[in-house]
Length: 251
Ligand SMILES: [Zn+2]
Image 1 (cartoon, protein in one colour):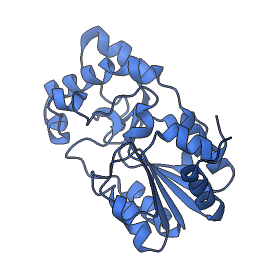
Image 2 (spheres, protein in one colour):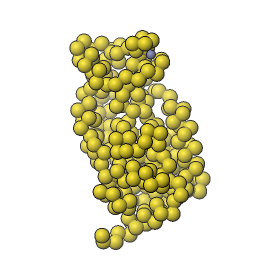
Image 3 (cartoon, helix red, strand yellow):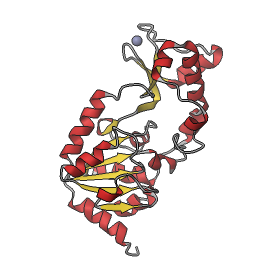
Image 4 (cartoon, helix red, strand yellow):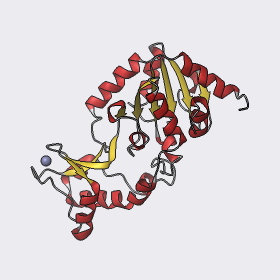
């Protein structure tokens, strides 16, 4: 393989790391065909987001939320992990990466083979649902079949609580357990790799800053400039799959 100084430097960072953390955002999933919901023309710019309070208060809002979820279902179901996800999974398997902190809700890290307990989902997961009161888990397929029959938003069969995709909505508190774990992993890391996040959504974007302040090396791989390029040790404005794949040696 031709020597590429950027890839070589990323590989050196990985070789030196004893405990790395990977932080991923929409950019890694767009390479799997999942649209960046926040980008211009993305679904959230065409429709006003449904706030968590509205979801709780209004059956119409819940119906609309479920309509939208099932409208995006074919895209989500068709998406497969890409080379970037596979490279991250390989790093976890080799023991180089202790945790993957993600802003994504698509479950593609788990689908690529990263064990559940090593994925920290800051914005939850849209591939299943749960009861907001008792936490009981529901698979989407059964909900979809029932919803398409009568468009009645689902309720928990155990406690009658509201059932919602396991995502964090606008206006909903960040999940405290995930935030705490992400902070602990960040502080334990000697290398922090950002892949596919423009680092504009706080508090999530605070983790790379914290890692750097705590003495870790910071590497950013993102198509576009980010708010933290200035403090990073290595910045690569390149495709994530190609870059991580080449540095890790994964196709
Ligand atoms: Zn319940």
